[in-house]
Length: 171
Image: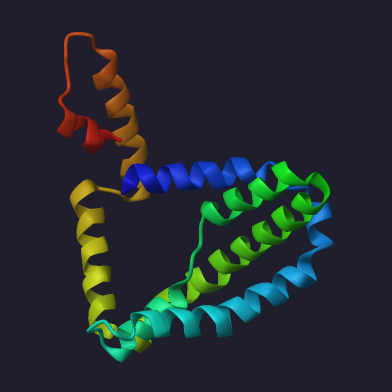
């Protein structure tokens, strides 16, 4: 999961280098409209309908309906349109990029609120799990730099070999 998250961040960053902010701003209004309709109407309706047969609580269904896709995959798919038709493709790419950014900013920042509101039990379990993982791996800012330096020093010494579990912990 950690490597996947890092790779998604890297892909999103690299795709962001393809965006010309002045060009993208031309499509801000359609992007906001698309994001609003998809976030408030289309996605919740479709997802709720699809997961209704599953044995989940109403709160869990509402939470999953709200969560949405926030990631680089949508932007990567928009690049395929650029390959087929550069002019139209760049419009689609810019709109998709803005929609993803807005989705990350709005849906992502409101997810803890809706998690507590719709499905408090799952949210508390998730929050406790995250807290335990952060404590277990010492993933708070003051330790991260020290851990990275220790890892570099450890791997630089040719006399020491590390196994797969140690490599997973380091990275």
